Length: 142
Image (cartoon, rainbow, N blue to C red; front, side, top):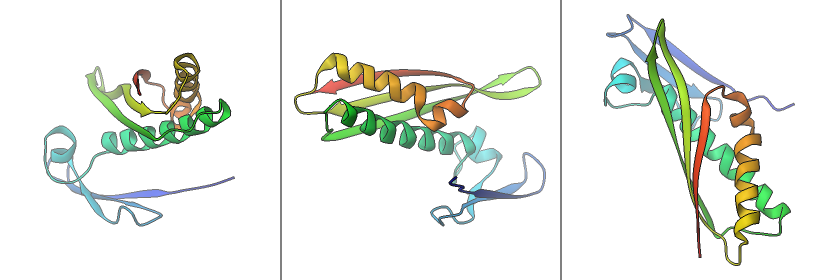
């Protein structure tokens, strides 16, 4: 079993408070987050963009493996995960993640590529974690 950790610290109220997020690896080290970074465009990070980065990374790595199983090797895979945070009764929820992929795979078969994309979307560990609707738009360049 592999375990990784992240941590958060917060001080103050929801709108005037300030927080920081850190990761076990040190890539994030007391990185600022707060109301203004989540609901406005203030400097720092927010949980949604971190989930987006995690999902994009997980999906892209999983896709590389699925492509390899089908005898394909990508020259490049570029994925953006757009995470939707919606106001609902009782607060907020992450309702959806939309993955946008541009892939350059010399000699790729479109049908095998499409199957690998769907398999990675369904089965990467972050996709399995999320209850949100996950959609994808993929483009295979030649």
